[in-house]
Image 1 (tube, rainbow, N blue to C red):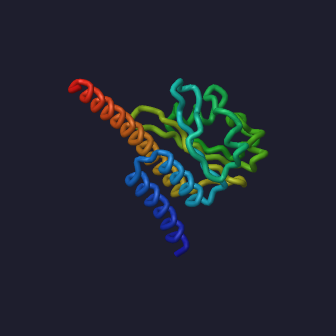
Image 2 (tube, helix red, strand yellow):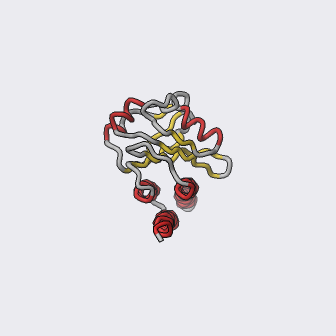
Image 3 (spheres, rainbow, N blue to C red):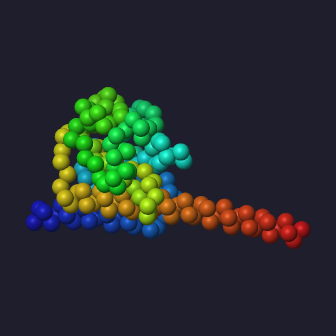
Amino acid sequence: MEANTAQDHLFQALYCVARTVNSSLDIMQVLQTIVNSTTEALSAKACSLRLLGPDHTHLLFGAAHGLSTGYRAKGPVALDQSDVDRQALAQRQTVYIPDARIDARFQYAQAAREEGIVSVLVVPLYVQDQPLGVLRVYTGSQRTFSEPELALAEAIGSLSALAIENGRLYERLNRNYHAAVEFGQREFE
């Protein structure tokens, strides 16, 4: 009975994220709901979502839940200094770090120690063949994730990528629409 309750909890979290992705074009609201739901569903310390910058060399802050302002402001994640993120994006696979405080692949190990972060799960975000960023799940003690938890994190990562792409497409469509209206008004003046 307890296993069904745990799986029901994971399913409910996925449903919440899917419903939010499907019901809002406010990308910041969607991303915040994603990190909140992921943190809760996985009983994690925190969750963050970082987006690949235009230069494809940095991961920029998107949204976070459970992380201090100081940790969020520690600086950009440079892919040439963050092997874990580079590995997740290059291999298009989730990467697990048992202890970020001592793992050389983690760019800000000292900041992780100060924040109380131990294990980290890094899920790459892709739409088709385009990398968009990473979803990170942080725990306050060393922890391994079960197969259903990994599957949930990866499903949420896929939904996150779709939400980001939908938001970008909507913004582009909206700009094009306004440009067309403005052009039409000038033509008829």
